[in-house]
Length: 385
Image (cartoon, rainbow, N blue to C red; front, side, top):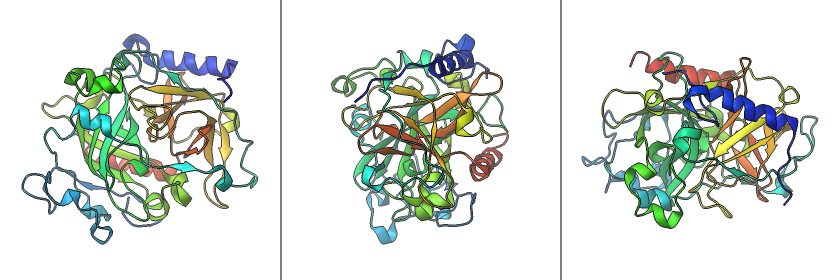
């Protein structure tokens, strides 16, 4: 495995990240401002469903011992109107979070597409670096998404993003579609919750089970009450990304456990989302943040990679994805990709979707008009709320 490269592009992104946070003291992504159908459809279709407003057929206890444990494929809820996510008190305890596993989302090198005119040479691996601790000072908007799937508790990464209809008071979280829905052969995952700045001080996995709550969840646990992803991911996505990978993005709306203070106000930072980012050749560098959990990582520590992006094409006619060299593994899925915006502040331009089975690179979708419509629809649904 080759070591991380150092280049002027890396320095540019590092400076952009620092400028993005400014007075908040965050050197990773953030901002100092105080602040989808469940079946295939046309490009940009918006899907999602309500949660917390009713049990949706679950037991009166919210489902702790009820239907959420039933993963029969024929009964697995996948349609938009079927989504439900009732809060189960104390389900996501530190020891259960620690046991969560990443969903499979790797592309074997033998299955990688040939050059179709829009695929650049495979990047050299960039060694993932640990983020500085405590995370609430250095990368507060980055966190983990926990959810239940057929195999048990699972985990991805995610980012707090700004809400255009609720400036300074966002409750929106950006992640990957495969972190909320299983794709063509499954349905919505359950018990979806977000934890910003998870494991704030970088405790070891052995210590997390007995850690105090504020050490594991410094800002608390935020359950999703609405989730939206693309029609293409749900209709085409699979364990290796499949043809749905270029559309593998999702937006969550979350609610605090108590009170009216928004997620953005609590965390103190949120990222703008850029749906008009320039072509890869015009971006000097992109940074990816997340919590890799598959070997050789353990899921407890936040990492980052910074590299110049290239292009990856999975199929003729499909949108071209971005690709960077990075050794992060499963668990980093859904984590934000950040680049310097026109004003020098970092903006979210993608999220981790797939990786190579040799842990040498990551690929993420280029956010297009379909992604913008999903984001806008969730924002408008909760406008003024």
